[in-house]
Image 1 (cartoon, rainbow, N blue to C red):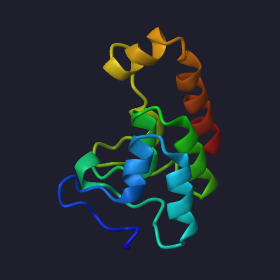
Image 2: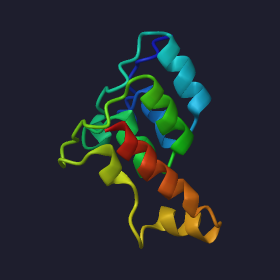
Image 3: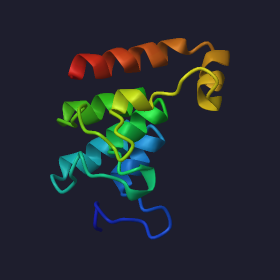
Length: 118
């Protein structure tokens, strides 16, 4: 199987899906093949990388995995955003769900992780 195949439905590679849905074990396996570009842009996500997608979906463990595999925290997407800029802000539905579950530390930890990586 082509671990870098692009879905004709979503325009995403498997690594992008792993980042979006916080599947660090899948991301790790894909990256260990040596065939995935950790900074490959996703056309359906403003040409952001898997790290942009992990930040946007608060996928802390997958973001950590991507950084361990040398993902660049300094790559800009088409909207000139860094991955850290994609972390949801107050009022975002995903952030509201995370906060209502008492998991605010995910946002703080993700911001710190990305800040430390730059």
